[in-house]
Amino acid sequence: MKLSSIVSAVVAAALLASACSSSSNTPAPAPTSGPTTAPTAATVPPPTSVTATMVDGSVPCPSSSDSCKRTDLAWQSSSSSATGFRVYLATIGLDPNATCADERANAKVVVEVGGSARTAQYFQPLAVGTANCWWVSAVNEAGESDMVAALGQTPPAAPTSFTATIANGSMPCPSASSDSCKRTDLTWQDGSANVTGFRIYVASIAGLDPNAKCADAVQDAGLAIAVGSSARTAGYYWPISTGVAYCYWITAVSDAGESAKVAAAGQN
Image (tube, rainbow, N blue to C red):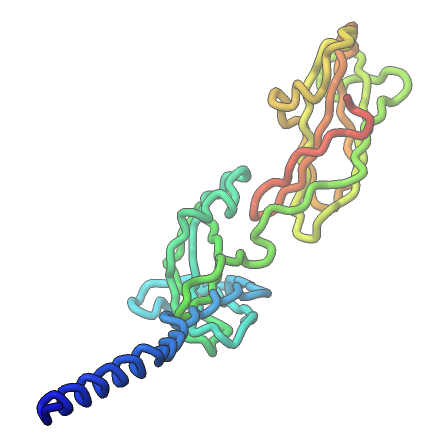
């Protein structure tokens, strides 16, 4: 055999062995990648024990020589993650039916303080015919908490144990007329600590109609009696008539608004 043929055979064998060796090596699996995004911070919980106290008398306005009223605000933080707090303000008129809850969506930020603050002050010009509503929220890098209303700013809880009892016999009507009246004696218990008074609402229905119900007449009920916060009883006088029945509801009121109506016990 020629030398060139021997060399060619050796080279071919070497190449074949190298190819077989390479094909038997399984590539190592690629490393598993970790999370591609960092965890997000939790939204901060709202503050607690929010209070808003209007200081008696007037004080100089910080930015002018006018006289102002000052409101002192205080709260407690619910989390060390709070980086700041925002104080919101909305104003309502002196309409007894106006409530802070109705103005919540219209509240504007008037004070912003850091995360270590637990108090703030707000000065505003003296104004007649308005009342203030306050909320405080907490903020951090994740966002803003819910707004928390100042204590005593939410409408009071409704009265409880409301009864309406028709007194026996007839009696003179309280008005100047000489007509005879019946009297309904109303009693209740207070359901809240911040009440400034109570309101009695009355509606009439066809008393001889078995399908007539007080629940259907609540929208037609008119304010008949308003009493102070210490009252727990009232009397309602009505002319003696045939075929008419009366329905009664009571609410509690405060500077923040009016509670839901509560029907007299046993009233259909």
